[in-house]
Length: 604
Image 1: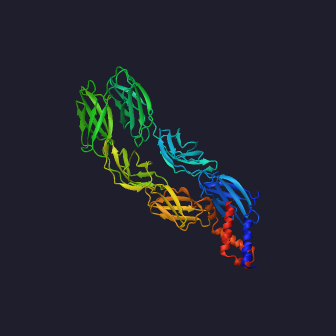
Image 2: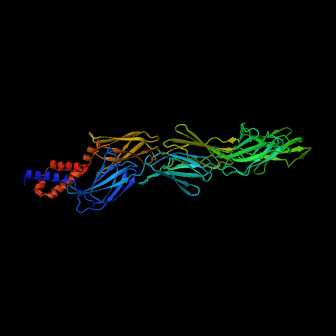
Image 3: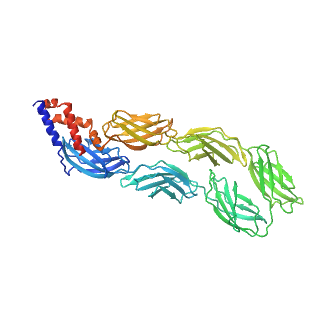
């Protein structure tokens, strides 16, 4: 046949495959989203088909390059797509060099993943959440999980913020959100933990203890160390109320006007000194009452003594103050005025101080009242830190100190931001930490007005932040693909992954800076890009970056997508079509000519 005959046969074959031929008997069975940047396409087999070509184009938008894939199977997950975007999926069946059948179907990718940006407790039963807006999302699914009871709430919103009510007080709630559209539900956001405020106290009572005095009491709230008491007279609501921070469950009120009405609001502070919503109590004073004394104590840590003070009682000649430890050992002092000092106190003890008025050598036990205090405890020991790489919550714990009432733990991050935690327990959950920062923790114990020395310092880092502003550019002249991003706080190195549609089309590069280069890349392809930041121990969430499009124009993208793999396939098919003698004479130039012509046919 000779070389000229072989060339003539090849050109005839090329002209044949340029003639489009379509049937409706090669249906696409399904095309569903496999993530925010991928669609899984499945189809029925076609008898004696050589190859299949998938052509995915953004619906009603010719400015975006199509994404092509050549496969020899009956399904393909096509990567490199845009989140929340409608695509026209076209299946083309090749029989040797002819497109013998084609079919189309509409599909859509799911939206990108939102992230919760704000989580705040509004009260003991309500929280507020905000998350990043995803333009392609039609709705958002908010999931709230109670760490205490395991109860789960599933809520749906059309906006990117929510107020959730009817929750439990003093409860940690793990919150995460999904975006969704007609294609399905996207990936879940990172978990955000929000703690509701403690509940306000109940059982408020006020009893008049003198013509201008009253004793206010309320029931304790579990784990509450301090209360906010606000007293407002109804005669002049424009005047500022009197506000007190009280560490017990009672408050002696002075300067109370007789025959007056007062509105009393009492809130509970949580361990971060954030007050709850108040319980409101209305109190009306009486015109006449028998006065009694109130007792206050001023403990001096430096002199191991306590100064006891009380309000004078009409008719009393003198007073006796007695301090008793929890083991029954008494210490006392007497005075005729309104104070006296008790010395020789022991450390690490709990004391109860009684003041009894004395008249004509008779102690009025009925009017005896008391106050309590504790001597200074020791600083906490056995400090430890616990944190998980997939959460920014840090658990700081320590050993209990003898007779300590309260612990004040403090964290200082690498940017100087300070957080403090008050607790009766020997641990604190620090939930308002920031990614990529180093934290230093210390704690001291408190008893009454005395503080122990500060403990030693322990430190730990949170997982690095998610890299932002990722951009990927192609240099077709050097077959290189370069990704750049803003440096992430706390990150020591980065990993960038690229997923294409060609055989062996997955790439990975690592970098200690804010850029990374992929070598030996071919132009004419769209790639899904993921980026992850790392430190010595943790990694940020694997984050989807914008799609990398290595084609400069639509026509060039189509031509380059049918790559060497297609060229080799055509060459092998041609070799099978003619005899061995002709196959040997068909040079690589002819095979590549056929491949280029096939690429033009696919583009049509």
